[in-house]
Length: 606
Image (tube, rainbow, N blue to C red):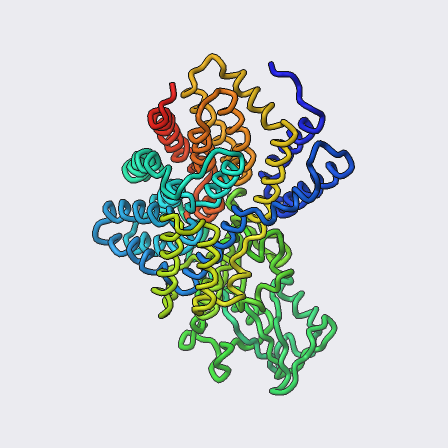
């Protein structure tokens, strides 16, 4: 066993373990953990100095080139969303489902994987999910056989280039700073194409057979609420009674949104207010309950927009163009770790929340939804006008699932797509560094009108930024204190009797296990210095060990918490945790074995 390192190194190793645990806790906001880790490192090394490490070194990670590149690419990707440039991609995925589902699934997997090699897979998944759900419904196929294979295919495609995921950019940037050499955009595409090809075949031919038919979290058969008026008559029970007495008559179930006494007078909804004949109570509820209220109060029920005709068989309740939609709470959305009341959801988005489904507890929560603190992956059933649902979808703040998808498409869509192609071309040919090309792309998007400055702010994901900076700070501390070298020595000591090729294979598996439990960026940023140290101690080339971290950190296949799109897919398809294990574990084994064979062959390792 190697000798113990310095106290500072042991402290950083322990802090790293604690950080990885906290990153996996859904109840603690990621940005809170990230900020806490940064502050602990700054204060610790300020109060207990070690070598040349200074607080400014940690703060410098906010200007890290890899982080700037990730942010710039996120912003440029938002330009594709706002202009609708991804609409043709989504249309290609859905066009053939009804006529030839098997071919359509293959095209969906290939198109999704190829697109993810150049674009962040999150917008691709967000744009594709509603299209695929609607296509599956029209083709009378369960969405559960489509959505998970599609999401995992985008993860495979993201491995193929340096800009495919933020993880790739981080590892390449850190490795280059450590002297591992520069990796070009397509330098590791070949092993991904070979291993990914086997993975895509598995997702196409076997994965749908392994997945049981799952019913999505909620469906459009959920009861709608209708906005109506209860007219207080002379002989009504409510005439002369206080509002509290009227509500007690309905066992407290009726919720009065407004009391209108005349065209110009609205009565304050105080429990003590006395109702009079001619008052109109504006109520929103299911048809069955509205009829119960009508009978209990002896009032007359009208549609809110048609007070001339009482509700009857000839004049039924009218939804007034209302639609139901399912809204998935994703990382970075304004609802994460907040209540509907706190964000003024109903007034802000002009949508009424009806029910809440929490996938991990496999139950729907009802009652006072406004006071429930939302978690990532929660699905909210909302009702509202088509315009309000469309506005929420195009805002990009949350994923909206419904069967009436109307993708945006503007005249600037081709221009936005051309700008993104230009960014990729400049970086791929080596004419400009990726960071510079991405920043030029952002400038071009804004100056051309493809996106506004508010879109730039909305595109930045604070939790992702804080995870990256905190991970970079930990990686710096582990490297400079000798913690990374110590972990590498432990790893080498445990595998010293194995050939270098098997040691490399073990590293891939270790990073893969880590990335399925915590953030892939955290696993990558912390694992890269360790991988470089292992290569140095073995006297092996650094590049295959750096690629081992890239490939392992991207194989977030086996758990829904492994990657943010997994949570979206889990909610949209009604999957259970076990479904990710059914498909993710075999896919992980296929990819791991393929990379374990390809990397030693390509880099002549024994």
